[in-house]
Image (cartoon, rainbow over all chains, first blue to last red; front, side, top):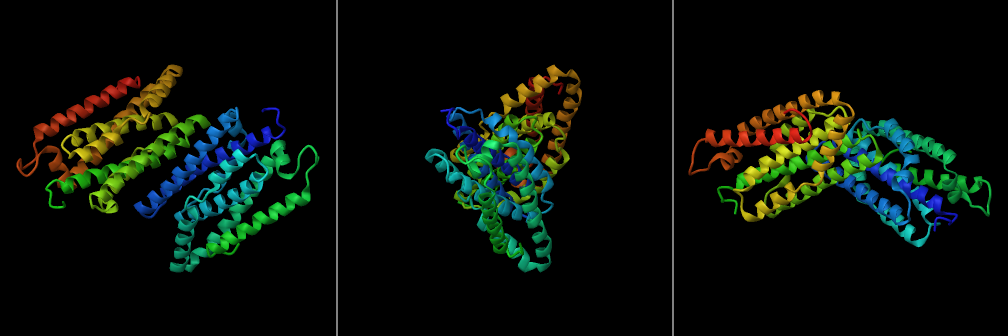
Length: 221
Length: 221
């Protein structure tokens, strides 16, 4: 099975997702400390636990494939940790926008890749991408906060742009280091070299979905 | 059911435990960020998730009793948050010692109270107290760290004493404010006034168990 040309790419993808879910757990749990009430804290903690359960599923699937989960996650720890360090939420609303925008972006990206995977892996990716309730909770709370005080919208719109910028920076870094993953995304052995048109089209879809999410929050993209 | 003389005390106890589990989740998830490896991070995250699941059980039991979980937790948010603020771990080993010593102390205390509860509540308390694997993980890692560098033992022993001191400070604060809980612990309507002998004996059992835990870690109490 390890001879399959796509094996490295699948392990890369699952390792990246597993690492992403574990760090998302950490970030959400941390941002729960910014919650204005104990109910909001519990709600964010519940989301964090959902991310951790996804991490467990991904790790188990890596083991089933015969891969070492720790080794699979290793290349992505630094880029993902750096993304979170450079976009540490300084208040509750920033945390909610980050959870909604960040998870949405990650989900779109995994969905783009997920379609070319084997059925078992693809099913797992779909399960992990299932909305855990982040969207409705974040959208409701951010919209209510803007309604209560329209001045919060400007800084949050800037924050959304910064999140997208940092995500692209770290994505470029990963793309530069992980050939297998890039090949999976934009072509394989039968299509050598990077297909820049396809990559551009995908980036277009990702940024367009990002704008839709910002609009859902009541923010300029 | 609300006319039961022990109802307020049971709600207080479950509210305190629920709040404690939610904040323990937050603390463990936060300390996971101090982990030296991605495996250790995942292990601490797993413990945090176990605490959150306990929180969910306690909250559901409060609802079943006809109590408002948020109101039940409210009196304990400040004392527990203050405990965690005043004992924020500054490194991985402090976090492990705190998880082990803090959870052990809380478990002993709940066990002392749990025996006088109705069977359904008592069963729940026992389930929540079941060791989630903290002990073995913390003991192994702290002992290994001391073996590798004996100089870490002194500061960690001081840290353990500080944890106990802060816990007693917050416990006194809660005791001064929650009559129902204190009555449950040291006597009821048929035994008015606080039985200082019984309270003293209980504190003796708690501090003795604390010393045993410090010894298990390889530290002076």
